Image (tube, rainbow, N blue to C red):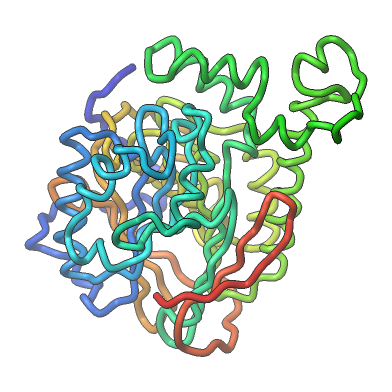
Length: 404
């Protein structure tokens, strides 16, 4: 595995400019009063990379006062947390992001593959539901959910749909888990749990009523409780999320519509593309005119396109928030890729008509600035707190309110 600091710029006509500017020379187009947020993935490592990126996020936070942080998975290394009181909550999260600009805003989080390795991924959801965060900033109401902000400038609204891509890409998850077990980055029991018995939550879903025995083949009964067992439960769970995703995208009237997941649709990094997301999620994003897909997983910073600029979805990989970085390679979709630790800053400009994405390394240098222009029809929205919709495993939709 290469950890060299490679950089790649596409030779395509929409090549972007790499800005060689430190934090003292901020992008002129962004004003400190702009409505903005941060994205960071693969961050809770406990390494120096994490603390350096956190410090720079604090510096930028004081300058731009972001409204929230999107945590793109692999929140706690190497295998997530065991419970809501796991000491790693303090050492990898609470005691690291301590700048006031990062303490007083929500952190909208999703699960990554490492967050599943402990077998207790639900603990990150319960951490929110039980309000265990001392700063009350952690937000993960379910495996997948969505929030909407009514005014990011000029009365234009933003909606972000948060996915559990581990549940959507089971084959990719198993492949990555096997690699991580072989390389010592995941416990062997995590692989046994997936291949033999499933998680306790999955077994409970398939457990028959007391006194009733579901019959199946010997292999099926090993996988669960007959009739396909855990394998069938996983397939149903995946389809429920895809159905919810399409319904959510179809119903959206937001001026800006983003989707966030851990696994990338496209990536120039070590792990590369995710075939399941290309097959199942990409067509939905194209159909419903999604502006951008935000993700992590590969430990680098990337901007990718699979269609002419302005006509398709923009893909951003922000996966180097704390772990060792991966090398990058040239792919057909890659416009920009860099093997450096950092995060991304998304700011809405010109009355919400544009979203500028700055790729920022751990030293505060802007490696790339890309401006997306609004392509969805504007709708009339009000001002005030953010409204969110939570999606559960059963496909139910519940409206929630909170201030942002």
